[in-house]
Image (cartoon, rainbow, N blue to C red; front, top):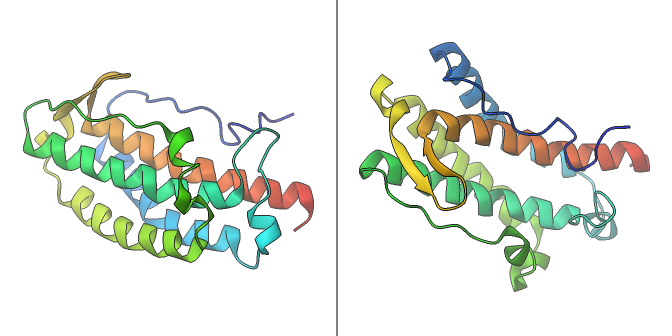
Length: 173
């Protein structure tokens, strides 16, 4: 049986990417908002408030988590490009998922993710070869480069979309 926490597998950073692999990862990030919108299309409020797995977040929390996380990823990219190995802030995703906006209408987060990704993809595609080696320090994960950040977010969106599509399949929605 598939591990419901990791429906597409756990993140594996791999080695530095080729320009073609980077382009494919950017394309994945570009498609994520539309795939998320499709994944939640037609769900009822009750379905949005259903956990995608026992002990896991609700679909609504997953939808709100994506722009929360990707806004942080966008800022980490900007910091890495603008500063010399900046230390980025960490945040507790579980606490963020319980903040008062966790029950907000999902359209707010779907629209935010679309706009964020439009800008983020524009920036990703504008990077020069030496930009991919720019680094930042993550207090929990250590030093990371921009290439690994791209790989992480190319995995992250599909990972959460698969939480929702997997739930829909299991529940027959």
